[in-house]
Amino acid sequence: MTIVVEAVNLTKTFDGFRAVDDVSMTVESGQILGVAGSNGAGKTTLLRLLSGAYWPNTGFVRAFGNPLSRDASSVRQRVQLFDAVGDSSPKMSIKDLVRFASLAYARFDDARCRRLMHALELPSTGPVSSLSLGMRAQLRLAISLSTRPDVLLLDEPTNGLDPIVKRQFLQFILREASDEGAAVVIATHHLDDLDRIADSVLIMYEGRKVVDGMLDDLKSRIQDVQAILPAGLPSGILGRSDVIRHDERGSLHIFTVFGEPQELSHLLRNAGASYVETVALPLDEIFRYLMEREGYTRGGLENVL
Image (cartoon, rainbow, N blue to C red):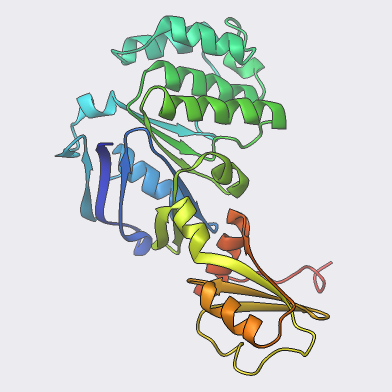
């Protein structure tokens, strides 16, 4: 696959606050990159930098092999930024909004737009203001995909969608990458969405890149090792640098391991474990451990309610 968008040492500040702090990343054609992070991590700012809507203080974006410039209108014809809470032009009619997009984008595909709107059960006439927030998001997705983008940047695209429409929405995105070869960057708090469709992930915290890489590789680096220890916990296990979390449930011990789990499994068996198993973790669990490692914790509501 070919690298279509590359960020090199991007930094963006607002009134002295670093929203994005020295972030580098790449996305290839046909790839779905998931961007995750706590609130205020810099996800939205990163997508706006990649689209050219924001300009970095330092670093640069390379699109289709060339540095992105302020007047790169031809590049912006090939890059679509989708913001779930953005302006849906509620004062316009649905028909006029579609026509405006068809005039603004040279590769706009009217037939595809009609097919997508039919599949999403969207009306073709009437004011945009008559649509629910979820339907407005679906309309903007249909229009975005109808521009035949080479790069699709999605910011919280499934907010406000019911489970059935959400599933359909994600299928459209998968198809855009696999069948059309589009590079997709999706920033979201819905980590189960990324678990379902992303090839790779970029996790951010306070504007910084915490970790990035292929999703399967990340899952192989952070796993649970479960062991039944009839004689109790061996000494020295909790002091190991690769053990980042420990949970005890009677004789069952669960160790979250950052790195290769084989050595710990071998030590536990030698210590008399009657059962040892390595268990893959969902992305939301991996995200929680990484955020805890960065110092991001949120207390419960016991003392508030």
